[in-house]
Length: 215
Image 1 (spheres, rainbow, N blue to C red):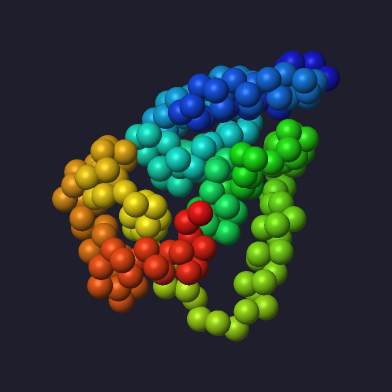
Image 2 (tube, rainbow, N blue to C red):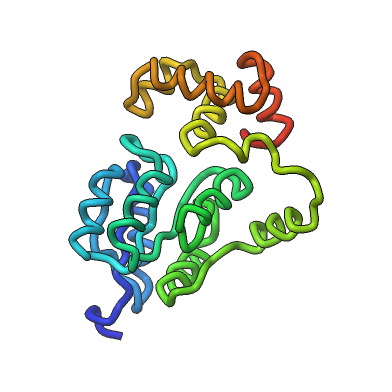
């Protein structure tokens, strides 16, 4: 296959080591080429606007904007680009949210290189990609007759705030990491506590651990 006909991939991840590792994996394939890389969400959106890729490999944890926000923006502006979300989070934490937001697939960063290549080929062909583990999780949810878990009623930012607080981070820590004001994060915290009928961080953390939302 010529470079012209190869699948053009854009890598969006804020860690240089991860970007280089992904480039090395894809360098061994003849039908996939790395067309560029982005270190943050805004760079990824800009490169997608320029039409430089067929598939966007997008880290769900970006320094300036959450991966879910970037995903929604790219799908709005350039719906023809297939987006494969990459994350260190377990699939049951963010995969379903990502797919509902328009992602073509979700892959854990600990997956084997062959699985990454297969996933890229699959989403580039217009199909969805989910791992066997996620397929089992979806099947379990279909078979469950329980009510929707409270954390699934949260917005993406509220859910992100929930998991970060449960991981031991303060409101100030979260504000600095997400480049948002302390007031804004406090608002997300108040909303999620109200929606989930929780009183304080201790109950929030207990809920997150009980429902396997944090490692």
